[in-house]
Length: 457
Image: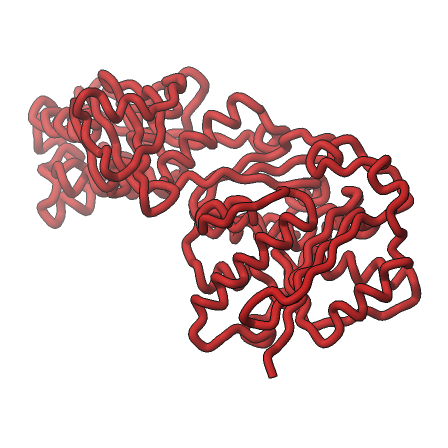
């Protein structure tokens, strides 16, 4: 006997997760091979529908005025889903709200559940987004009536057909358990978390007033957002976590573009918690300091406002590691780069990796030549280039443009257009402002990471 699946979608009045009321429900009954029946109805939720929900769904109070109340259709929903697995795109959201409606009637509604978001992550990996609309667009599924229960449930049924075809062993409700995330924020539902992508990009936290309060970048947006919601280590983390009322994201594909977009967005939107944390990308820099003895010293210090370091780093540890690298590559002196504070010859002199600037054995002008070489080699020879890297999907690449060493902007282009013939790459670029931060971001990224390609023009 085939397992029955009740593929469900609901629309609500947009209340908090604990008090949402259903305004529309659609159920497509699937026998594991095809849809065999369907049910759809508006529901009079007996509470006001906010304007933003009407703008999203098209459902207003006049439409539900003569619709049945939930208790009037409850028995039909029970019968229609009896013996079936409750399936939904982000099932915890739909299932728990349906259960809540039944609980208000004194009925304990229970069904086995299956989540098409989690199944999609398993069977269609590496998608930039698992939102229903974007996933259907990727899979060429037409949605007739987006953000209406009937249209979204039908699209979920079509997606379910694809998932069934991809799983040679056939899907059962026990094949993938729904993970329970432990975080205490009544404003954030499991549906919000489940649609987050496991890819590179920028994420945004909003408060109840729809204001952006924090912007972050991550190689795995979903994992990073969950870490915020589970963070109880500091008072600041707890306060911000409790202020989060909504989450949004932008998939970039490229980590470099994520860094550039994060920097731009923070400067433009000035989120409260980014400002409160005095969040800066590059806190430490290497500076030159030529004392009376004539030797050029390289000094790692915190970057003060208005200062222009030779090279900048996000942490002191990165700066120290780079100084050691310069010492080894250019035979510099540990004392002259601040890595040796004891008197006398440095350790590298003892093992013949330093020519003796630390004890006066090597003349200043000879030592300084190598310092100039180290400084020159640390600066990127960036003239006019396109930086080509990963795109948001397998059919495209990301493009960052620099002209005469200055940042122009970024964009995306189809793989087949990766050439600068007739300025093809320039056409895909969205323009942004060059500033010191983006200069250092690009400089650091190219120095520490491999990109797929650079094209001079």
